[in-house]
Length: 133
Image (cartoon, rainbow, N blue to C red; front, side, top):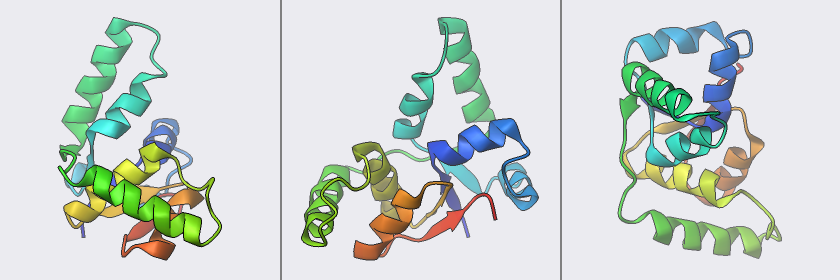
């Protein structure tokens, strides 16, 4: 099985003690990737261009890269409509939905520590796995 790491998993990975040890092995084995929206979300926390360059190098050297599919916005619209239908109009963020769209398009399981992905999975066939277990 291959995974797409959400920002929540990457942040905990950087703290090391908040991620289950088997995920470090999966990352080393090349089984965990990231996508542009995770890169963009993580970039919001950098303090300088040097930090940004270091972050990008770190992401590219540790994780496989998965581009966002052309169908990502259709996934977002469809999933938001289904969530609203369940009364979850203030549900997952657009960033979470774009990560889910990318994972689903490439047949990946979202590796996360964010309950919003379990919510998305209620109305899609998104596969999810918590990184803290």
